[in-house]
Image 1: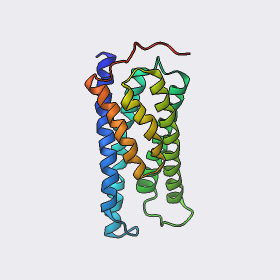
Image 2: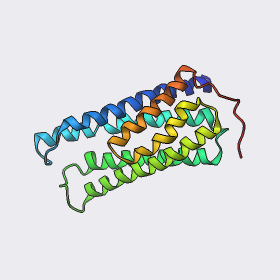
Image 3: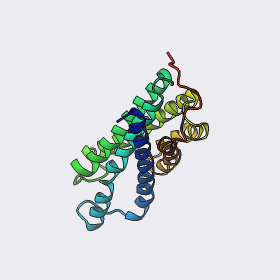
Image 4: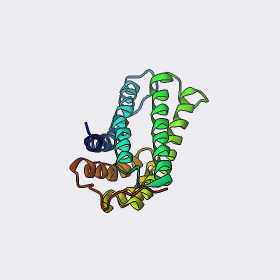
Length: 195
C-alpha cells in the first residue's frame, strides 16, 4: 500500500476525529454531573470515558498531515507535530486517570483525581502550542491548500480551552483531513526539503 493511500486514509481519520471530538464536546453539556457513587455520576463517568476513543483518530490525522509534508515544513513543523502529539497524550492520560484509575476519589482534594485533571488541562495547553507551531509551519510549507492551513494556524491555539476550544480546533482540523482524503490537498507546489 503506497504512502499516498495511507495519507488519504489518515485524512479520513482526521475528519472522523475532528467530528467526534466536536460532538463529544457538545454532548458534554447535556450529560449532567453527580457526586461519585451516584447514578448521575455513572452517566458522567461513562460519557467521559469516550473521550480517548474520540481522540485516537485525531492522532492518526496528525500522523497523516505530518507524512504529507514532513520533507517541506522543517524543524518548526516537526516541533509542532511532536508538541501536539505530547499534548494529545497528556489529555488522554489525564482523562484516563480521572475516569478510569481514580474515578472513585472525591473531587476538591489533593489526590490522583486532582492530579489527573491538572494533567488534562496541561495537555490542552501543550496541544494548543503544538497546533499553532504546526499550523504556521504548514502554511509556510505550501504543500496543502492555503485556506484550511491558514484557518488551522489561526484557530488551532483555541485547543487551550478544554471544551469550547475543541470545537474551534475541530473545524479546521476536519477541513485539513478533507483535503487529504479528497485529494484536494494536492501540493500547491512540489515539496522541497527544508533544513
